[in-house]
Length: 92
Image 1 (tube, rainbow, N blue to C red):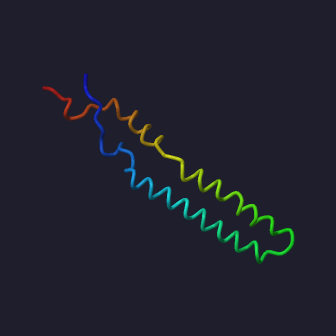
Image 2: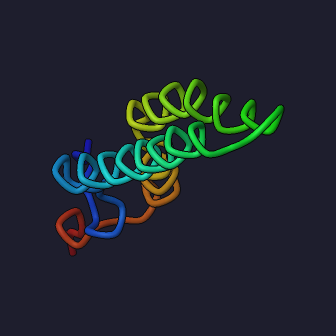
Image 3: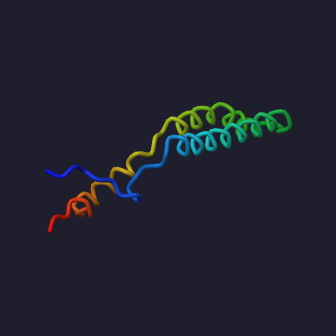
């Protein structure tokens, strides 16, 4: 029985790279929330409901995006390449 080998293209992103990506998405969403908060002070009339909705909804979206781990892409690559023989399993 051959042990499962990993090719370089099927490896998932390193935890540091994934964390950096998720932190970037979170910071962008929180930056948009600050813009919405500022707009709450200068928007007149009923239009104020739009930035208020952004202030309320964006934290939920930001935390949801920050907690999503993208492991499905690496799993699909791994299952497609599992039938490919590796050089170490070749015996003449």
